[in-house]
Image 1: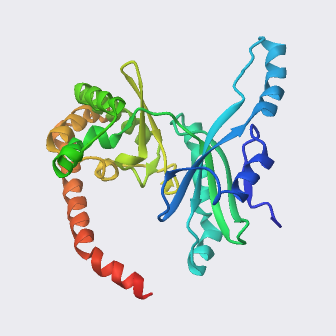
Image 2 (image 1 turned 60 degrees about the vertical axis):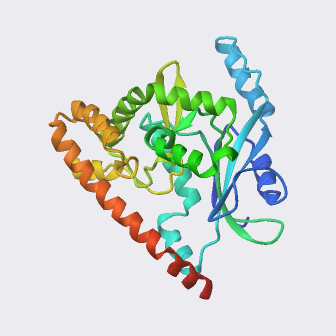
Length: 304
């Protein structure tokens, strides 16, 4: 790399990360199969880094971390055309924004997997340039999809019939979500309110981009897929409800969310729900049109 168009968290060994990127296409385990982007996970050795950190810790309180391996997720962004790359020179690539926004979220006390590094225009063994974002792998219990879209699971069961199979662990998780759904939604409403109060507008605030850890009935929410965010934004009720409208559709669940959110924003529940419902309907119409025009758009892309 001729210029330093990357940044690495000081806790991690730059050489190890560069070696992963060089061999990205040949090694690693897929988390997200190739599509627009690819995500793979890798195990890295962090022993040398820990030795340095533990030497300092020993002087203070004699605490020693014995973990020497860590799983990291590496997201490879699809190559862009010339025009897109030109604009990226001004606003930063998706990889760079993901890294910088993750750091900003943590500064705001909003949880996200630890950012490790980003690399722009990294040339791999096939002499192709790609951008990469590297973060710590998060062990989570479920996502907002399982909370707000139970009908998707029922549809899968109906469509697959006898072929529908899930692990015992997944069954236990779904049963737990079913039992505690209202409690999770109420805690998520508080999380969303705090996010908005912090002046953060997460433009991809959707069910799959919120990972949830169950801490004995207290739920922790982690944001992922961070390249489209705004900070320092004053969000009125319209903007707030538009922001969460992709998250849910079911009327009963939306009303639970609004009941809790209204307590914190100190507005009547009916006003909050009216706003949210307005944007839910708009989003449904948008999805309908996109589904309707998908075959035409795909055909157009093939011609190009």
